[in-house]
Image: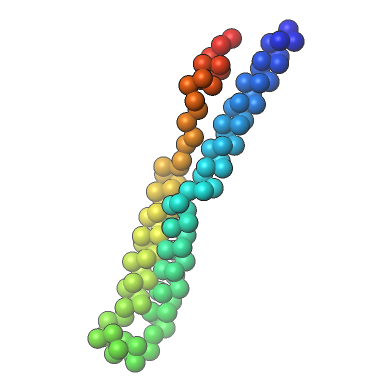
Length: 104
C-alpha cells in the first residue's frame, strides 16, 4: 500500500512539473514580447497621428504617416497576441515519462 501511494505521489509531482514547465515556457514566448511592443508603439503612434498638426502633415506630403503607421503596427501587434492566445506553447513530455505514467 505504501508503495502505491508513493508511486501515485511521484506521478502527481511529474504532472505538476510538466504543467509548471508549460506555464514557464509561455512566459518566455517571443510572440508576447513582439506583440506587446508593437501594440504599445502602435497606440502611441496612432495618438500622435491623430494629434499631428498641419505642419507635420505637410511635411509628409499630405499623408498622416504617424496615424497609418500606428494603425498598421497596432493591427500586427494584436495579431501576434491573438496568435499566442489561439496557439499557446506546449512542452512535450519525454517518452520515458509517458511510459512511467502508464504503469499501474
